[in-house]
Image (tube, rainbow, N blue to C red; front, side):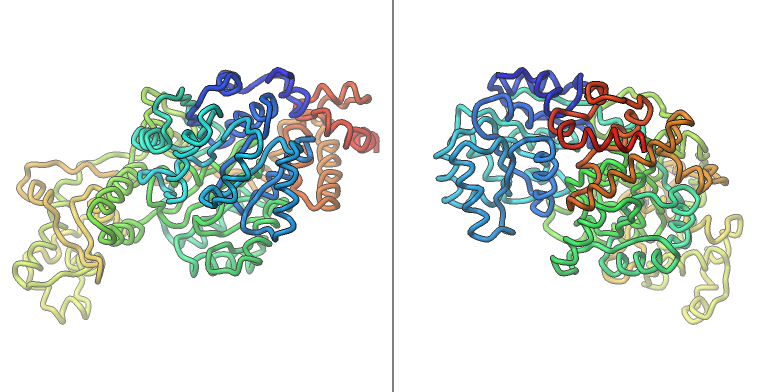
Length: 601
């Protein structure tokens, strides 16, 4: 029986494990249960793939990612691993073929959607074979506190009862202490070993920009920093996805939409296109991205505020899986806060309370004057981190100022409208009153006679909108769901009575200095020696042609990091090529001669 290190080298082509992997793998190989919290790109997959290859039997991977199972199986097959999947996309003959291979012991790994385990026939099938390990991927889906709860995951606790001798490993890339505890409880893993890696992704630069014409801001961001790069743009609604995708295409950006309103064939085609082509931008709702293994996503952009820090972290984590520099960029403004606060009126009380806590944490991240990375890590229970020096608040620190008096003026305007006129209005009318604008609406309602009319001329229109945004973020104002009118909260009184100070953030006046488009486009080759850069591009061209011929994503052939190492070392023999990280036995046999030919072309 091979050791885990031997399998790592022979199959995957790596000489050493990443931090934390070896301890997890050896624990599961020895038959122990494990709960693993490790960031996207940290190497979670190896933590169950290697035990499945070392232990006798078939590793069963429970994954919600039906649309990606084929790509996951293709990637393993390219490594010489015998892998298959069972899900609702297959016809009877395809399922029968996989089931026969499982029973004959001709599989190393079998991927299942969680709902398959609720089908009695699937349970009977598994009972007839030998199972080496159960892996529960995207384990946060079992948690009500997580951002992607799925009821089918609740049934997975039964695996321990049905197969008590088979080790279980549950894995997720995102979990707060509350989510962590719930995953452990619901999956019956309280007695398992828990492995919590650092959530830091130092190669990702986190930036949140004040929202002003977000379409144009996005286009400028792409043109100046990520021209020709692959990336994901997240929007809240399907309509926004379609509009932004069309806008980008009209402005010369290769982009496609992805949302649940598209037919399944179109969604699958756009996802496959993103995985297989270089430089494509996907504009999507949060329905897109979980389990995407594409390593060279250079940016993730948000044009709408995520509902939780966990969701934001999971989505931004899809950038820079290869360890190269990547950007998590978001445009954030007053309407984002208004919209999300309005949504908090939906659902039962427990759900509303849960969502309010999620939103409060997300707003605090947006409004912080401190390091965003420190705040992210603190949210996931990783306290004591030093400022990163790489996020926007580190590079261009915003000021904090005493906004108590402006806050009192806003709250007073809301209060007087209610008391004196029995009226409620939205942000625009409140700001017009404070600025003393004699608009038609102000005159129609006689608001020019209010004592607060014109008391706010020390700030401009945009500054007042910023004040209101932050009062909403701090829970000192609320928004009515039906009409978006501003109303006071229980905390407003303390401010009005002068019993509470209101610190506010003043956004940095200057943006971060953007890289030029040319520099951004050449970034993958920029770290190479000058003579290796054209060799790297030649290898990429060979990989693209090979991937297209085989109908698989380019990274299934080799990652960029492997091609860069090949270009730098310039091996002249198969023996020398075998020393490169990411070149295992199967890939050496399959592609070795072609790589050497490309090097001498």
